[in-house]
Image (cartoon, rainbow, N blue to C red; front, side, top):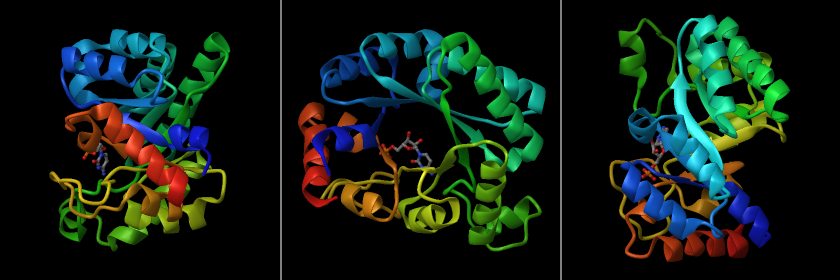
Length: 240
Ligand code: C5P
């Protein structure tokens, strides 16, 4: 894989407070292309943190996992897109009308901003298993529910899914070559697992069909985050 292609595919998750996030972003500027802002940072700092990262030159995955009535999700997608987010997440379990509303909100923002953020659906959270699905009244196997929600998302204008590396190959087959398949749970060989259990290395995740990998603590918790990021890029250049 080419160096620029590898940089396009690695999304660095900044799950920390503002000062640490800005220090990391400044260090990674000129190296990393993508940052992920999740609920921890966004609910503390709001849309200004997205704008600050955009000013440093990053593309931003704003991972707020929308799930509400369609009217609210349309507005959320529009607002997040106008804040500058390049990629947004939404729960597939919100069903077709909500997914379509998410796309409409992103399209509305595109009329103002000139470009539409891409959208990825969460299918079944990887923290859930068959027993937790049964708790909420879903009796089918996890894989069947993942497939159902991935198809529903694609049918309603969503560009792809977030899934574990173990699901990437099936999602790629189901959604086709152009879909976004974004996989967290990625650990370079020898890295601490943290609370992730089913993990793959960066090259394994890409080989399985991931378009993008999300890597947090192996980079943000490293003694030298830039070196840790560059090692992942080097792995992809050599092996993917
Ligand atoms: O630090 P780590 O590499 O585990 O970070 C992974 C990121 O991906 C975190 O921001 C986490 O919220 C997110 N994520 C995940 N597992 C999922 C979906 C998202 O770890 N199934």
